[in-house]
Length: 144
Image (cartoon, rainbow, N blue to C red; front, side):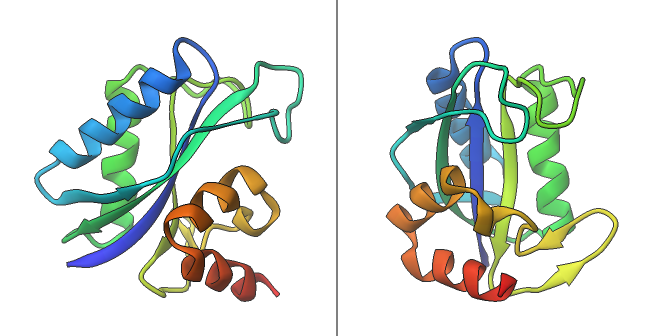
């Protein structure tokens, strides 16, 4: 089993309930087990700021999936929950990003690990530090 760290966010509908639903769906996946989750924090929108505040959290998962397969599982859950991608950094029912996967570093057209912008986003780092401070530190060091 490999360990991965996810960032989850939502800002339309019932964001806190959608984060809980996403965690339940991740844990119900046959190849994913949620082993830790942060508290939910409220943050201002990043990038595109003329939208509602976000609810954000982080989760640690154990998985048999390879990084790109984990990404596809997360995208499937987003679609099952009704996410439609209308605009970059726009409002969303749910967003599930892979922040880190073990200590893998990769840069492909599908996935960049650690997450390309995580070190710039407190809404990712604050919840990640709550459940895995060493991972948050590693993500920051990889971007230096």
